[in-house]
Amino acid sequence: MLHTLHIANVALIDQIDIEFTPGLNILSGETGAGKSVIIGSVSIALGGKLPKDILKDPQKSGFIELGFSVDMSDRSFARLLEDKQIDAPEDGEVLISRKITGNKSVCRINGETISAGDLRDITDCLLDLHGQHEHQSLLKKSKHLEILDEFGKAKILPVKQKVSDLYSTYRQTLKDILEMDMDDTKRFREMDFCEYELSEIDAAHLVPGEEEDLMAKFKKANSAAELVHGLSEIYDEINASRTSASEAVERSLKVISHLVTLDEGLTPIHDELMDLESLLHDVSLDVNSYLSGISQDEELLGSLQERLDLLHDMKRKYGNTYEEIMAHRDECEKRLAFLKNYEERKNALIAQRSRLEKELEAASNELSELRKTYAKSFEKELKAGLVDLNFLTVEFEVAFDKTADFTSNGTDDVDFMISTNPGSPIRPLAQIASGGELSRIMLAIKSIMARTDDVDTLIFDEIDTGISGRTAQKVAELLGKISKDRQVICISHLPQIVSMADTHFLIEKDADQNGTHTDISVLDEENSVKEIARMLGGKEINDLVLENARQMKQMARLETRA
Picture 1 (tube, rainbow, N blue to C red):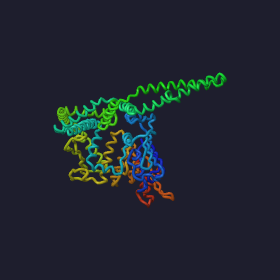
Picture 2 (cartoon, rainbow, N blue to C red):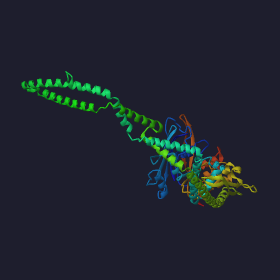
Picture 3 (spheres, rainbow, N blue to C red):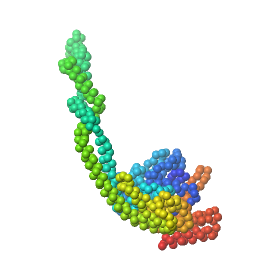
Picture 4 (cartoon, rainbow, N blue to C red):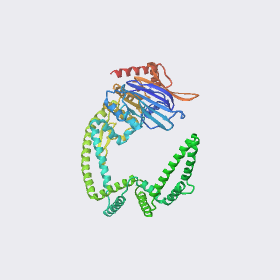
């Protein structure tokens, strides 16, 4: 059940908080007061599309929050939350919020961020919202099939899923067969090309990290002359020249060895010179060893260059890295295997297509028979519901036709047929139903679905469009009947419906120096009577109109107890 609604900085609303109750919650008020903004805010919070300029103050964020009480003994809802990686609340309290900043928004469930799509999947189990113009969807035949499938979902949906899965495989098979449309000349040419690329890559005997190693070796080999010249000069400076470093250190050691006998304080200098002599000796050995390892082999340099050129050619053709080149090789190998087994694969796909067509036909026929069975029950229940809504001489049936081809929904083309006047032929609903009739038909459908759905809350935005008088009373009675088992939240302009309210909210629009604002209040019994009187009498509300309003409330109470 939806128990709280908080809205801030949305359309005409600065900030409002609403506490809904079980039973029938009615929202009334003057046209333009902002009633539909409240229902629209619920739709937005449930993941609906953000209207343009939705924020009252564009410099601030908008915020909508819905508070639900959920029976957590129903493990199906808990599993749905877990599937979306949302922790199931132990206390059954579910808070759904949407923060709107500019053209962006963030949806959350119990503080955890969730995508709008996942949010809609979850809230479909909590609330059914009938928007202002949703009854117009009855003009679309695709909606008729959707309604029928929902009516018999316990048996229909598993078979429908089977058909959908088969159709998906069937479509992929058709696509694969189209892709197999290749003549032998093209196939052999592509096989030759794949074989050439495979042999070229394999002949290269590529090794991971080889290029870096070759580059280092090539750089060293290509710089051999310069290295020999430089290192030889260093060696000469240390050992071979007349003023070599080694001779200088050796002469210095002779001097310091004598001086240290005169002053022991010179011992550290003596030791440092000894270390320097040892270090120069080591450097001399290292330089000499490195020089002996340098090869000025032009043949080696050429072979390194040739290998590097091959690697660069491989990269240019097949990928920038060893991994990319080998991945290309694997793709070539797979493609070659495919081309070699082309005829066998094509024949297998054609056989698979034939098998899937038979399976699809059988599953579609099974689905169609189920639908026709449930259509009879649906016709009977909807006709009774329409009679309750003042369609006194109504005929209704579900007409079936076959689609030209297989679809993911089977092969049924369903159309709702209706006659609302005595002697009038039964015709497609879209051809004869008026706006008011569509509203009542949709309400009758919703009332049927409410008996089988697990959804606790139904919201109707102006379901009373285009009706009045006795028909309005019938609609009011049906809403009251539904609200005995479900929470119903409804916007209405009709006193007959408003009088049925268990909780009556008044939406008002005020204007001051700061702009226009929408406010909401809960009406007590007396103020509810006054609001009904306003609907009955307009500006002139006299004692007679008030008494009429009180009688409507009393009759409504008697009706709800019946």
